[in-house]
Image 1 (cartoon, rainbow, N blue to C red):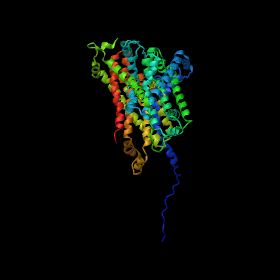
Image 2: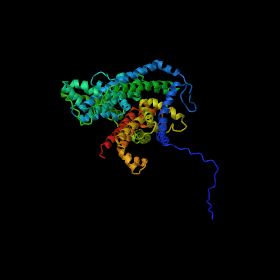
Image 3: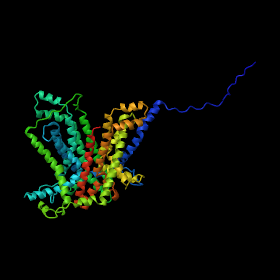
Length: 587
């Protein structure tokens, strides 16, 4: 008996080519880029394209416009910098920024010191005084001081003449512009210096006292040097904000014939025909100043160590002011009077005056001299609700999208090993170094050229606010992510949840207070913004800040502008108060 074994047929065909494989290392690299790539593209487009168009316009023969982006490069535009008007505007800007910064540091630093480190009476109220000017946007303060300090018909000069004194207040001057800038930017110095002095370790001061140092010597040689990073940081921030400030300079400096870089850029952009290349060239100079100052500050602080916060409990000593207590209170009260009380009273009085002309305060006693019905007319007008509706829509949407984008970027930077994290963070912080008037020009050219039909719609304002406020949103959310331990999120993943689900049900709920506060911060900043939308709004897309500026600057309707400013300040107070109220709730 024979047994036959079945053999499989012989296949003479060549073996199939091996399929390309993705190595674990290659897969990891692709995965890391997939996480950060879309965000890099989005943030890079939103931020770098507008800035790039400004740089291109500074080096080309024509400005970017639909259907024609000129890449014919030239250096001829930089001849503008030698123009006497540009050189004078540069000198004016640097002088105003320097003096206003010094004055703001004195005001904010003194208030920070007496509230954080002294036994001054009414400390809680003085702390509130240091913050209150934040409720008045700087351009509203400028409008109020134009009413108060006009050399001919200003309310302060009218009061002086009623007292038989000479009218000496002139806000349309270098001194007036410096004073108003310093008053409304001093809170930035107050916040930063107060925080540094509150956290300062008292051991070094005690050591100075043990070795025979007096209180004045200790403050001079220990306390204030240790607060130097906060002083320099707030000083740099204020200098940049004043240097790029357009509204205050336009309201107070332009009538006095004092040109600054922002007002010069605005004027040449609004000229007929517009001189966009000249504006871009001067804008590049403004950005260069900001970058240079930032670099110098970092190099200076890097040479020394200022670490004083240790792991042990500590409580900063309070300095006994002695007889100087009440002069300190008077100083704080004077600042409160100049920054909040007088501006609000001036706006209220202007809104209620029937006649725009007043030679004496006795005129107000005449029958019918005051009529506050303008508030009712504004609040019941369809145009106000249209403008207010635009402001609310733009601000809420920009704040919501800005918070979401800030969380996505902050998460990638702080919680992943994605490639390009440092680049993503750097691009996101670029708007902090670019003045708003420069960003406004770049955004104008960007959305005129892009095939996406956003220009002329309310959506272009949303995008603009999203770009301008990106650094503030990222800083706020990043601080919270760094303070939230990732073990809770990782535990959810280890128990079987996908990463996205762990973020949604663990990380986001833990950060809800911070995200809500960030949303309200961006909402407040959107409501305050004026410079960027100046280049982007149309008749149908006006917002409250633009409407107030137009009424005062172009329409000559001072009564309506003052009334709307008061309403605007009330809204700003509510929006500013909400984050503090929400953050103080127990959770």
